[in-house]
Image (cartoon, rainbow, N blue to C red; front, side, top):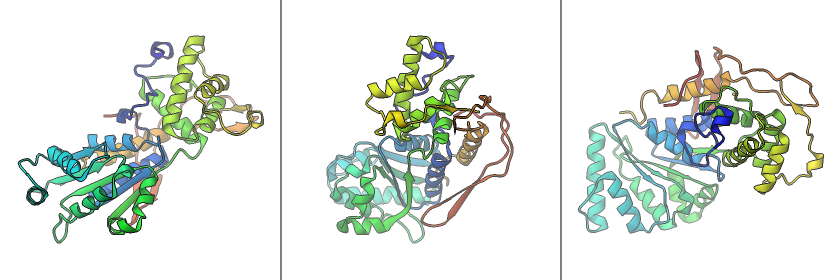
Length: 355
Protein backbone atom coordinates (compact mmCIF):
# COMPACT_ATOMS: atom_id res chain seq x y z
CA UNK A 1 0.00 0.00 0.00
CA UNK A 2 2.79 2.44 0.90
CA UNK A 3 5.43 1.20 -1.58
CA UNK A 4 4.85 3.88 -4.21
CA UNK A 5 4.67 6.64 -1.58
CA UNK A 6 8.16 5.76 -0.27
CA UNK A 7 9.60 4.81 -3.68
CA UNK A 8 9.95 1.09 -2.94
CA UNK A 9 9.88 -1.92 -5.25
CA UNK A 10 9.02 -4.41 -2.50
CA UNK A 11 7.67 -4.48 1.05
CA UNK A 12 10.74 -4.28 3.33
CA UNK A 13 9.35 -5.32 6.70
CA UNK A 14 7.18 -8.41 6.24
CA UNK A 15 6.91 -10.93 9.09
CA UNK A 16 7.64 -13.92 6.84
CA UNK A 17 11.21 -15.34 7.04
CA UNK A 18 12.22 -14.22 3.53
CA UNK A 19 15.94 -14.98 2.98
CA UNK A 20 16.10 -12.29 0.27
CA UNK A 21 15.97 -9.73 3.07
CA UNK A 22 18.68 -11.23 5.22
CA UNK A 23 20.90 -8.51 6.68
CA UNK A 24 24.55 -9.21 7.40
CA UNK A 25 25.00 -7.33 10.65
CA UNK A 26 28.12 -8.43 12.60
CA UNK A 27 26.19 -10.66 15.00
CA UNK A 28 24.06 -12.27 12.27
CA UNK A 29 27.04 -12.75 9.98
CA UNK A 30 28.76 -14.70 12.74
CA UNK A 31 25.88 -17.19 12.95
CA UNK A 32 25.70 -17.71 9.18
CA UNK A 33 29.44 -18.28 9.00
CA UNK A 34 29.19 -20.79 11.87
CA UNK A 35 26.45 -22.74 10.06
CA UNK A 36 28.45 -22.72 6.84
CA UNK A 37 31.57 -23.92 8.66
CA UNK A 38 29.71 -26.73 10.45
CA UNK A 39 28.00 -28.05 7.31
CA UNK A 40 30.97 -27.68 5.01
CA UNK A 41 33.22 -29.56 7.43
CA UNK A 42 30.69 -32.32 8.19
CA UNK A 43 30.56 -31.66 11.92
CA UNK A 44 27.69 -34.10 12.43
CA UNK A 45 25.28 -32.53 14.91
CA UNK A 46 24.85 -28.74 14.95
CA UNK A 47 22.58 -26.88 17.37
CA UNK A 48 21.29 -23.38 16.63
CA UNK A 49 19.33 -21.73 19.44
CA UNK A 50 17.87 -18.27 19.89
CA UNK A 51 14.98 -16.30 21.30
CA UNK A 52 11.66 -16.03 19.48
CA UNK A 53 11.83 -13.73 16.45
CA UNK A 54 15.62 -13.43 16.21
CA UNK A 55 15.77 -14.89 12.68
CA UNK A 56 16.65 -18.58 13.07
CA UNK A 57 14.25 -19.78 10.36
CA UNK A 58 15.43 -17.04 8.00
CA UNK A 59 19.02 -18.23 8.48
CA UNK A 60 18.00 -21.85 7.79
CA UNK A 61 16.16 -20.89 4.60
CA UNK A 62 19.14 -18.82 3.47
CA UNK A 63 21.36 -21.88 3.98
CA UNK A 64 18.89 -24.19 2.22
CA UNK A 65 18.87 -21.95 -0.86
CA UNK A 66 22.63 -22.23 -1.06
CA UNK A 67 23.01 -25.97 -0.68
CA UNK A 68 25.01 -27.51 -3.48
CA UNK A 69 23.16 -29.71 -5.98
CA UNK A 70 25.02 -32.74 -4.57
CA UNK A 71 23.27 -32.32 -1.21
CA UNK A 72 20.01 -34.09 -0.37
CA UNK A 73 18.26 -32.16 2.39
CA UNK A 74 15.26 -33.06 4.53
CA UNK A 75 13.65 -30.08 6.31
CA UNK A 76 11.28 -30.79 9.21
CA UNK A 77 9.36 -27.69 10.25
CA UNK A 78 6.69 -29.34 12.45
CA UNK A 79 8.45 -31.30 15.20
CA UNK A 80 5.34 -32.46 17.09
CA UNK A 81 5.58 -35.95 15.67
CA UNK A 82 5.59 -39.45 17.04
CA UNK A 83 8.58 -41.67 16.29
CA UNK A 84 6.72 -43.40 13.44
CA UNK A 85 5.51 -40.06 12.00
CA UNK A 86 9.03 -38.66 12.24
CA UNK A 87 10.50 -41.53 10.25
CA UNK A 88 7.71 -41.37 7.65
CA UNK A 89 8.37 -37.67 7.20
CA UNK A 90 12.14 -38.06 6.87
CA UNK A 91 12.08 -41.07 4.55
CA UNK A 92 9.60 -39.40 2.18
CA UNK A 93 11.90 -36.42 1.79
CA UNK A 94 14.95 -38.67 1.34
CA UNK A 95 13.15 -40.80 -1.25
CA UNK A 96 13.26 -44.02 0.80
CA UNK A 97 10.18 -46.17 0.16
CA UNK A 98 8.79 -49.69 0.59
CA UNK A 99 9.51 -50.31 4.24
CA UNK A 100 7.05 -51.86 6.64
CA UNK A 101 8.82 -51.72 9.98
CA UNK A 102 11.61 -49.83 11.74
CA UNK A 103 14.17 -52.57 11.12
CA UNK A 104 13.63 -52.42 7.35
CA UNK A 105 13.66 -48.64 7.44
CA UNK A 106 17.02 -48.42 9.22
CA UNK A 107 18.53 -51.03 6.90
CA UNK A 108 17.40 -49.14 3.80
CA UNK A 109 18.46 -45.80 5.24
CA UNK A 110 21.90 -47.17 6.08
CA UNK A 111 22.37 -48.42 2.52
CA UNK A 112 21.22 -45.14 0.98
CA UNK A 113 23.44 -43.01 3.22
CA UNK A 114 26.47 -45.25 2.71
CA UNK A 115 26.04 -45.24 -1.08
CA UNK A 116 25.64 -41.47 -1.18
CA UNK A 117 28.74 -41.04 0.96
CA UNK A 118 30.71 -43.41 -1.30
CA UNK A 119 29.76 -41.24 -4.31
CA UNK A 120 30.86 -38.06 -2.53
CA UNK A 121 27.32 -36.85 -1.89
CA UNK A 122 26.04 -35.33 1.35
CA UNK A 123 22.78 -35.82 3.25
CA UNK A 124 21.48 -33.21 5.69
CA UNK A 125 18.53 -33.35 8.08
CA UNK A 126 17.38 -29.93 9.34
CA UNK A 127 14.79 -29.78 12.13
CA UNK A 128 13.23 -26.43 13.00
CA UNK A 129 11.50 -25.74 16.33
CA UNK A 130 13.47 -28.65 17.79
CA UNK A 131 12.67 -27.59 21.37
CA UNK A 132 9.22 -29.12 20.69
CA UNK A 133 10.66 -32.57 19.95
CA UNK A 134 9.82 -35.30 22.43
CA UNK A 135 12.62 -36.98 24.35
CA UNK A 136 11.88 -40.21 22.48
CA UNK A 137 12.34 -38.59 19.06
CA UNK A 138 15.52 -36.86 20.24
CA UNK A 139 16.87 -40.25 21.25
CA UNK A 140 16.08 -41.58 17.74
CA UNK A 141 17.99 -38.62 16.29
CA UNK A 142 20.99 -39.57 18.42
CA UNK A 143 20.87 -43.09 17.04
CA UNK A 144 20.72 -41.77 13.46
CA UNK A 145 24.13 -40.20 14.09
CA UNK A 146 25.51 -43.75 14.24
CA UNK A 147 25.31 -43.88 10.44
CA UNK A 148 29.00 -43.20 9.94
CA UNK A 149 32.25 -44.69 8.71
CA UNK A 150 35.60 -44.71 10.47
CA UNK A 151 36.36 -41.15 9.43
CA UNK A 152 33.13 -39.45 8.36
CA UNK A 153 29.48 -38.88 9.24
CA UNK A 154 27.05 -40.14 6.62
CA UNK A 155 24.24 -37.92 7.94
CA UNK A 156 24.49 -34.34 9.14
CA UNK A 157 21.80 -33.02 11.46
CA UNK A 158 20.93 -29.42 12.35
CA UNK A 159 18.63 -28.77 15.32
CA UNK A 160 17.32 -25.26 15.75
CA UNK A 161 15.00 -23.94 18.42
CA UNK A 162 14.32 -21.52 21.23
CA UNK A 163 16.52 -21.32 24.36
CA UNK A 164 14.45 -24.17 25.80
CA UNK A 165 16.35 -26.45 23.40
CA UNK A 166 19.56 -25.88 25.34
CA UNK A 167 17.71 -26.63 28.58
CA UNK A 168 16.26 -29.80 27.08
CA UNK A 169 19.69 -31.02 25.99
CA UNK A 170 20.92 -30.53 29.55
CA UNK A 171 18.46 -33.15 30.81
CA UNK A 172 20.18 -36.14 32.41
CA UNK A 173 18.38 -38.62 30.14
CA UNK A 174 19.66 -36.79 27.02
CA UNK A 175 23.30 -36.46 28.10
CA UNK A 176 24.42 -38.87 25.37
CA UNK A 177 22.85 -36.64 22.70
CA UNK A 178 24.40 -33.55 24.27
CA UNK A 179 27.85 -35.11 23.97
CA UNK A 180 27.27 -35.58 20.23
CA UNK A 181 26.82 -31.83 19.65
CA UNK A 182 29.86 -30.75 17.63
CA UNK A 183 28.96 -27.09 17.13
CA UNK A 184 26.64 -24.69 18.93
CA UNK A 185 25.45 -21.40 17.45
CA UNK A 186 23.46 -18.76 19.33
CA UNK A 187 21.19 -16.25 17.62
CA UNK A 188 20.93 -13.07 19.68
CA UNK A 189 18.85 -9.92 19.46
CA UNK A 190 20.64 -6.85 18.11
CA UNK A 191 22.81 -5.58 20.97
CA UNK A 192 22.65 -1.85 20.24
CA UNK A 193 20.83 0.86 18.34
CA UNK A 194 23.56 1.04 15.69
CA UNK A 195 22.84 -2.54 14.52
CA UNK A 196 19.11 -1.80 14.50
CA UNK A 197 19.80 1.25 12.33
CA UNK A 198 21.87 -0.88 9.94
CA UNK A 199 19.12 -3.51 9.83
CA UNK A 200 16.41 -0.99 8.96
CA UNK A 201 18.58 0.82 6.40
CA UNK A 202 19.66 -2.43 4.70
CA UNK A 203 16.12 -3.73 4.32
CA UNK A 204 14.94 -0.45 2.85
CA UNK A 205 17.81 -0.57 0.34
CA UNK A 206 17.00 -4.18 -0.60
CA UNK A 207 13.38 -3.11 -1.15
CA UNK A 208 14.62 -0.52 -3.66
CA UNK A 209 14.72 2.70 -1.64
CA UNK A 210 17.18 5.37 -2.76
CA UNK A 211 16.48 7.31 0.46
CA UNK A 212 17.10 4.69 3.19
CA UNK A 213 17.05 7.24 6.05
CA UNK A 214 13.26 7.34 6.15
CA UNK A 215 13.35 6.82 9.93
CA UNK A 216 14.87 9.62 12.02
CA UNK A 217 17.56 8.78 14.60
CA UNK A 218 15.07 9.40 17.40
CA UNK A 219 12.62 6.99 15.77
CA UNK A 220 15.28 4.31 15.35
CA UNK A 221 16.36 4.70 18.96
CA UNK A 222 12.80 4.23 20.18
CA UNK A 223 12.29 1.25 17.84
CA UNK A 224 15.32 -0.34 19.52
CA UNK A 225 13.81 0.27 22.96
CA UNK A 226 10.38 -1.08 22.02
CA UNK A 227 11.60 -4.11 20.06
CA UNK A 228 14.42 -5.02 22.46
CA UNK A 229 16.52 -5.60 19.34
CA UNK A 230 14.38 -8.54 18.11
CA UNK A 231 14.13 -8.48 14.28
CA UNK A 232 10.52 -9.73 14.07
CA UNK A 233 9.33 -6.95 16.39
CA UNK A 234 11.40 -4.39 14.49
CA UNK A 235 9.67 -5.51 11.29
CA UNK A 236 6.23 -5.25 12.89
CA UNK A 237 6.86 -1.75 14.24
CA UNK A 238 8.44 -0.46 11.02
CA UNK A 239 5.73 -1.88 8.78
CA UNK A 240 2.95 -0.32 10.85
CA UNK A 241 4.88 2.95 11.15
CA UNK A 242 5.28 3.23 7.37
CA UNK A 243 1.57 2.58 6.93
CA UNK A 244 0.76 5.27 9.50
CA UNK A 245 3.17 7.74 7.84
CA UNK A 246 1.64 7.02 4.44
CA UNK A 247 -1.86 7.67 5.82
CA UNK A 248 -0.69 10.97 7.32
CA UNK A 249 1.29 11.99 4.22
CA UNK A 250 4.55 12.09 6.20
CA UNK A 251 7.64 11.21 4.06
CA UNK A 252 9.87 10.99 7.16
CA UNK A 253 9.00 8.87 10.19
CA UNK A 254 9.78 10.45 13.54
CA UNK A 255 9.58 9.25 17.09
CA UNK A 256 6.00 10.40 17.59
CA UNK A 257 4.73 7.96 14.95
CA UNK A 258 6.74 5.13 16.53
CA UNK A 259 5.26 5.91 19.96
CA UNK A 260 1.73 5.71 18.56
CA UNK A 261 2.41 2.46 16.70
CA UNK A 262 4.21 0.85 19.65
CA UNK A 263 1.29 1.72 21.92
CA UNK A 264 -1.18 0.08 19.51
CA UNK A 265 1.00 -3.03 19.30
CA UNK A 266 1.45 -3.11 23.08
CA UNK A 267 5.22 -2.83 22.66
CA UNK A 268 5.97 0.31 24.65
CA UNK A 269 9.07 -0.03 26.85
CA UNK A 270 8.42 -0.84 30.45
CA UNK A 271 10.44 2.17 31.57
CA UNK A 272 8.80 5.54 32.18
CA UNK A 273 8.55 7.32 28.82
CA UNK A 274 9.03 10.70 30.46
CA UNK A 275 12.49 9.62 31.56
CA UNK A 276 13.57 8.71 28.04
CA UNK A 277 15.54 11.41 26.22
CA UNK A 278 13.76 12.47 23.03
CA UNK A 279 16.63 14.55 21.60
CA UNK A 280 18.55 12.04 19.46
CA UNK A 281 20.00 13.40 16.20
CA UNK A 282 22.23 12.01 13.51
CA UNK A 283 25.16 12.87 11.90
CA UNK A 284 26.65 -1.23 8.76
CA UNK A 285 31.85 -32.66 -2.12
CA UNK A 286 30.62 -29.47 -0.96
CA UNK A 287 27.57 -28.90 1.15
CA UNK A 288 26.96 -25.31 0.07
CA UNK A 289 27.53 -23.73 -3.30
CA UNK A 290 31.05 -22.44 -3.81
CA UNK A 291 29.96 -18.81 -3.80
CA UNK A 292 28.42 -19.03 -0.31
CA UNK A 293 31.51 -17.77 1.61
CA UNK A 294 31.64 -14.84 -0.80
CA UNK A 295 27.93 -14.20 -0.17
CA UNK A 296 28.71 -13.93 3.54
CA UNK A 297 31.78 -11.75 3.01
CA UNK A 298 30.16 -9.48 0.45
CA UNK A 299 27.01 -9.20 2.53
CA UNK A 300 29.03 -8.15 5.56
CA UNK A 301 31.05 -5.72 3.46
CA UNK A 302 27.92 -4.25 1.95
CA UNK A 303 26.49 -3.68 5.40
CA UNK A 304 29.75 -2.08 6.54
CA UNK A 305 29.70 0.13 3.46
CA UNK A 306 26.66 1.90 4.89
CA UNK A 307 28.20 4.33 7.31
CA UNK A 308 26.50 3.91 10.71
CA UNK A 309 24.73 6.97 12.00
CA UNK A 310 26.08 8.32 15.26
CA UNK A 311 23.51 8.46 18.04
CA UNK A 312 24.30 11.24 20.53
CA UNK A 313 22.12 12.86 23.11
CA UNK A 314 21.40 16.57 22.59
CA UNK A 315 23.67 16.72 19.56
CA UNK A 316 23.16 19.15 16.72
CA UNK A 317 24.92 17.28 13.95
CA UNK A 318 23.70 17.38 10.35
CA UNK A 319 22.44 14.09 9.01
CA UNK A 320 25.06 12.58 6.71
CA UNK A 321 24.36 10.79 3.45
CA UNK A 322 25.10 7.13 2.79
CA UNK A 323 28.82 6.74 2.08
CA UNK A 324 30.33 4.83 -0.80
CA UNK A 325 31.79 1.37 -0.21
CA UNK A 326 35.32 1.14 1.00
CA UNK A 327 38.24 -1.26 0.92
CA UNK A 328 39.91 -2.48 4.08
CA UNK A 329 41.34 -5.53 5.76
CA UNK A 330 39.00 -5.86 8.72
CA UNK A 331 38.65 -9.33 10.17
CA UNK A 332 35.57 -10.78 11.87
CA UNK A 333 36.57 -13.46 14.40
CA UNK A 334 34.20 -15.79 16.16
CA UNK A 335 34.55 -18.90 18.24
CA UNK A 336 32.87 -22.31 18.20
CA UNK A 337 33.50 -25.51 20.15
CA UNK A 338 36.37 -26.59 17.95
CA UNK A 339 38.44 -23.67 16.70
CA UNK A 340 38.45 -20.04 15.68
CA UNK A 341 37.08 -19.21 12.29
CA UNK A 342 37.90 -15.91 10.59
CA UNK A 343 36.13 -14.16 7.76
CA UNK A 344 38.27 -11.70 5.84
CA UNK A 345 36.34 -8.74 4.50
CA UNK A 346 37.93 -7.97 1.14
CA UNK A 347 37.59 -5.21 -1.43
CA UNK A 348 34.03 -4.29 -2.36
CA UNK A 349 33.10 -2.19 -5.37
CA UNK A 350 29.47 -1.21 -4.98
CA UNK A 351 26.54 -2.86 -3.32
CA UNK A 352 25.95 -6.50 -4.22
CA UNK A 353 22.44 -7.72 -4.86
CA UNK A 354 20.99 -10.77 -3.18
CA UNK A 355 20.71 -13.99 -5.15
